[in-house]
Length: 389
Image (cartoon, rainbow, N blue to C red; front, side, top):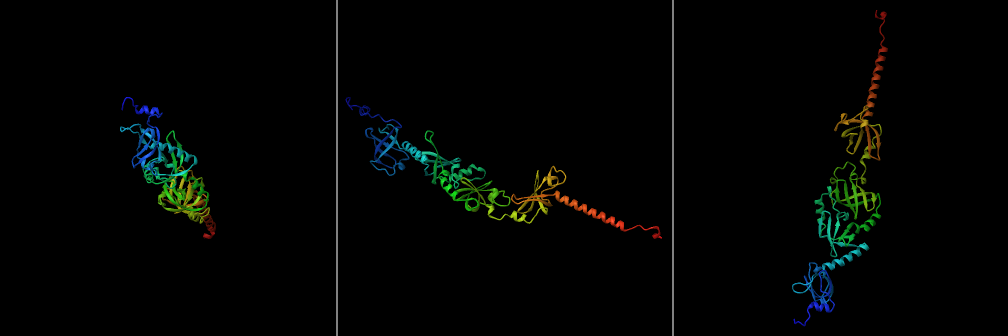
């Protein structure tokens, strides 16, 4: 180069073209399209090389001559040409696409690439986002007894790589925040399905979780709960003894609350308590076994399906401070029925009433015996002196 030849910087100034800077966005036509690199004709700014892991996916359907945008990540390489990337441009366009989806409440598919104990990590249109556990559908929500975090993570890992339909719940470009919800994407479907259901209807569903307080059931995409008190007529201590995850069960809808169902398994069968108690009436004396003793009284097992209560005030005519002083677990006694509440499934018993009856019977017996002795003494007259002679 001679002294009277201008350098490149002066040439760029003469055509009013500023030199490229890092993070600039440029546009050029494709010269060469390879799997791991794309060469762009940037016009007066020369030729640029586009690199990046996202290239193969981002250039699908493009060909030589097509125009595309890229971001400058290095203004000039050692070889003298700018190094470009599609990632930032893709992210900028991605935010625009996501903003439109947020405004229109559009549902779309995502594929989680990782998981943590709080939810699933995703990437949409070049933007990283998050799908919280609480926003998973009834089908995919990890119902875990005791909220075991390791088990929750294990369940979430099973969703990695699967396509899930979601809707944007929160979007904040300045904070680089994208939160999506699978539940929201299904809301219209769920509301539509629930509008066709009614209390008292018999339904079929798949058990999605068994926890200490009950059983979660997926009824055609709608979440239902069978509370522990609605699993069976007898006392249920462990729901997992009755159903397993994945099992299909039948249940009765007993309440509908927005997008959730309250279900009952036991109400599809006859109430053995009612059948058993129908044999009794107030005032009957029955035999029972003490099963539990509490500060307020004692529970009595009448039959395998029927349990009753003897309140502390019904244990004795005298004041009772501690039921343990009068009854013990495993002891059999005769009780008198003092109240039957079929609606509340309550059978109230009394030992005091039975004691009264026994006392009354004993009193009558004593009276009869006394009367008999008196009559006997009246009928046998002492002999006179004359009769003795």
